[in-house]
Image (cartoon, rainbow, N blue to C red; front, side):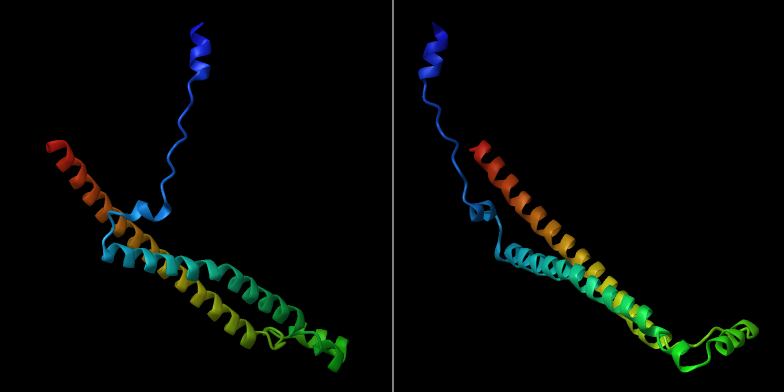
Length: 143
């Protein structure tokens, strides 16, 4: 019969905590660090679509690089010249690919720097907040 009494007990709903109350131990400096980390996360997140665009440009450069070389010249003569020479056939690929490689390097550096800054800012902010939380907890226990 104890089971019916337990079923009649009304369970209290769990209290929901507002999101911004999680930062009640954050100082102005901590909030600034969180904002900088958020901005770096956005910049780092924009890098994925940018990389897709740069990759698309690279694929287009590959596809169109030698497209008209064989049409302008005699195919047999062009092939014979390429096979006899020790040099590679210049089809105009080095200039656009050099630009694309530069874009990829710059994009990689930006992602690395923003990821580092984001992680550092969040770690500093969380360390500061947890120290304030511990101080408040120990002062509450001591009193």
